[in-house]
Image 1: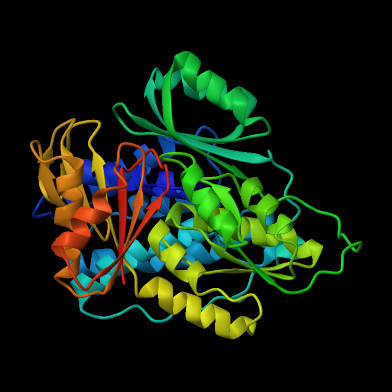
Image 2: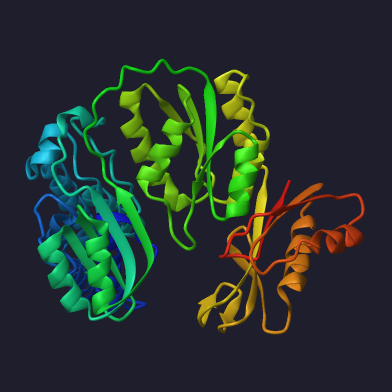
Length: 439
């Protein structure tokens, strides 16, 4: 469910196939059977398999005949896989042009090398590659303009057939609903319409892929500006009041690359510091940075993974300060902020804190479930989360109030914690009634 990108969903399916045949104690022959299952499932997920990708590596590993000595067997696999990774450069025109190996193939090879290291007791030597940098200028991308990903409940086989007609790089992974769907298309609406026609699509992510752009020499940019991504109209007003640009994040999804491009350009500065607030936005920011370079804009991303860390960084942003100093101060502010959240479960699931049912109130600290309750109110849970976070120290608490939350929560918290500064902000986000930050 957490897989991202074409290689990500294929790797997830590979591990799924392996797990289906894996046992607590395995012989070399059982390991071989698990590798075959992994390669088969990964290959079935892709509508048009290509040589020079991680599918090639999967086949190489699965085709190696087992021996009685398990350690020697996995070392031989790792060695063959490593050689196969080097050969990917010659198997895809894009890799040849850039002079690099396939990243997905390299990632999968690490799995086999880790197994070999563990069972043999010796580390594989450093991988020697002819080139360690990618010549991006040598690659001219000619495929569809957008990547669409979503979770899908419905007729997966029919959807796969339709997407193969209108798009490229189609993967539909998962043995049972919900399925993870990935496709490259020129018109994202067409892919989503097909998904809706064959079932239900949600947790939708649309990313604009790298294209070619003309250099704009009509502007003479200078200075430093900031861009912050987050959810909620209230948060947008808060960010705008600071003079920064705001990128609206859809509930349970991510902004498109084009949204970041637009905000970066509207910042009207030579250097733009971007605070993405979500790890799923990092790739989109990187793509946006590539696109705006032709405008004379340099993007500096501080890799925040939550809204509170982004706000903490924005609070110390000084457009008049030296760029390197601003980046250092903002990064330190973000790293010193611990985050928490309160939300209501919409379905039953197993979490690190135990089983939760639809309607349960969940308190999260640092993205890990802290408490689950079917009797506590969201206000009570917010108090519990703040108390638990303050047990680890802190003198400033920021609470972003979303839809369903109460602005008066600040009075209750202040009464329970004299000497602590509380900042209550109305964010109006729909995903969480309360977001909490402690510095």
